[in-house]
Image 1 (cartoon, one colour):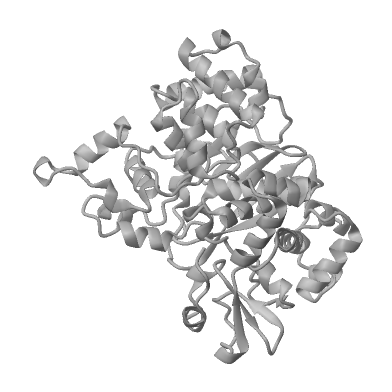
Image 2: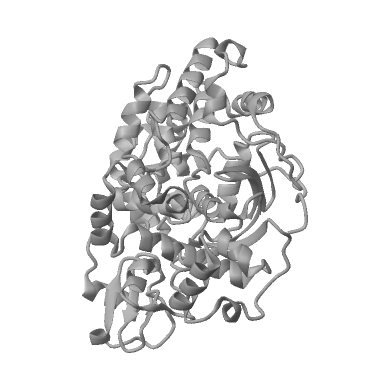
Length: 495
């Protein structure tokens, strides 16, 4: 990640450019407060400000969060997925709550560094060590739960990842200059125990309806359901199962922040942070759509598609292992056929769950379960069944890790060493499970057919190299021309 240039940062602050929200924070020495770049307050003098790459860095420097612009409630930095360097990969795991579950040693092990070296690197790149970054994440989760739910404050403390009520109280007072009780005030809504309703920030433009159409077209029976304006699925979380229902709509005004309403139902509230981070991955919430669209809009092949659907996202995942297994099942079969086969695998090997949302009946089978399955019993060709069980065994043993901790190139090499896993599968997994923004699938039949229709023969072939570093988004625009609208289905329940 590049070092912050103070003059460039100050220009962004003066123009209140929302595109930089989540990229850095502005700390004001005279007030002791840090803000997002687009804060509507009067612009402070250049001599009175410092710039920090994360909220944790600003907090570590002794600044409190602005109560007006809520700088911690922003999408994450797009650099986390674009560069996918050590700092970005660590932030993804910290946001998933890994430090709360496994400590700094566990984080370092996933990244492949010693704890001391990882701490030095994160302090250099992000302005704070792992514990401070995790603390900032807990504080932000706590604030959202305090202000938007009627959960008892003791439940909020543990749902946000704090180990004690005292730690929760001290952190909230230090970060927000208010006690949890004062922060709550009267801004609450009724919730049932285990239910958490949150508004997830995404950058605009946001093509929410086309993201919904993609998810609905590929949904797996028992695990996912969808209808006009909504999508829901089960979640296999560290401490127990859960579900989420999302309201997905378009937000077309560029350069602002939109919000996706997400209603979580969790067996264990300690999974709140993990559930939120995984759904944000699914939404590609930290993408910078303005940068992507500006790069692709002038292309003679893609320009018309980009202008027709600004803010198109690359659908991510809530579980990397699930994405890989689904990709292997879908090799060389139609989307409809893959849905049918995957639904049968889920019904046979997935764990049943109770849900208030009709149609959500199972968790997707975990890798350890599928690794024990006899390939001959799977409803697919034997070679593909063996490839699936071999992949599941590699995932279960840790030989292949799809949690965004390891380097992407290392993961790709490990996948290609498995029998039955070719470049198309490895690259598709990199795009959706690892959030790789620059993947193209030249052998994909649908892509070749779309390009043939878009590019007249005399004009010559399209040049995907011109679409770097956003080829994954170019690919989505090509697929988007084939995506049907979400079928009309009544909403599962009142939200």
